[in-house]
Length: 95
Image 1 (cartoon, helix red, strand yellow):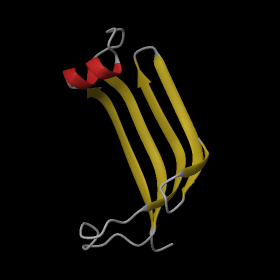
Image 2 (spheres, rainbow, N blue to C red; image 1 turned 90 degrees about the vertical axis):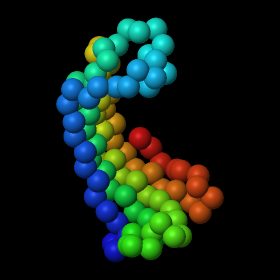
Image 3 (tube, rainbow, N blue to C red; image 1 turned 135 degrees about the vertical axis):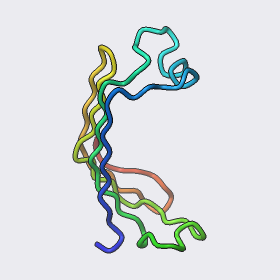
Image 4 (cartoon, rainbow, N blue to C red; image 1 turned 180 degrees about the vertical axis):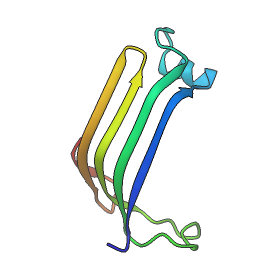
């Protein structure tokens, strides 16, 4: 698909800024760093991204989440799934 893209990110020992940490963990139970974050996804837009993408916004039409993992203190989350997004921006699917 010419408007489909792969996205991958992985990080370890990610330090959270104090304001974000306070928002995510107001009770202060988690460490200030995320030990592991991994994202592997497929993104489909309504048109290919190119040098003009900033001038007229490309809209996300589908998301395939092959793997999403976060390990933060005693919290471990993982997710997979697929969403389609209609022209009104309403997602449908399962994560």
